[in-house]
Image 1 (cartoon, helix red, strand yellow):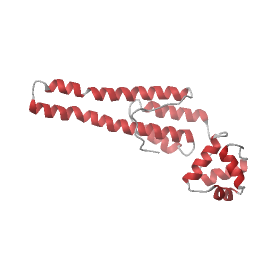
Image 2 (cartoon, helix red, strand yellow):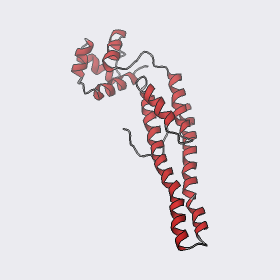
Image 3 (cartoon, rainbow, N blue to C red):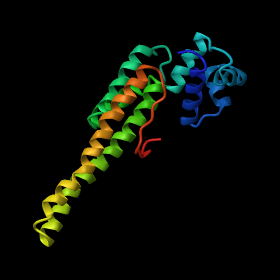
Image 4 (cartoon, rainbow, N blue to C red):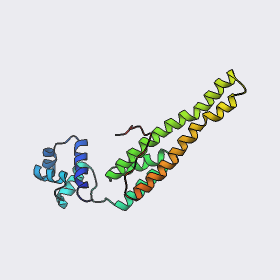
Length: 187
């Protein structure tokens, strides 16, 4: 991992732990100015400082492997093609400590998949409820209503499939990605 990413990770982890720059500097046996320069991306931390930061912030800066990260991030995005929440949840749970990118992408993918699961569940029960209500009222048009009420289910499936595919391709090409209809459950 190189600057400025190291600085961003240090800042994020320090804030998550509720530490000030002074407290982190004291714990690492360096000056506060050194922590400020690392966080701003001005300097690369020396190996001694990086090891201390790894221990105190409970993050492994040395085992950052970009190719490995891209693989796991791509798998997470591709899993959203089928709206299967378990795969990105497991990858994110086990790999978020080692990579800021996996942590960020994992949250986005999980937010999208949880949102789509809720929407798909709603779309799946809609035809049954509609059919039951319409069957009581009008027997002839109830079948047409049932067919029309399944359209949102296919539309949501279409969105899941192509969002996962396009975002996986964007990640592989190092471009920004976006999930539509995603509710931010994880921040």
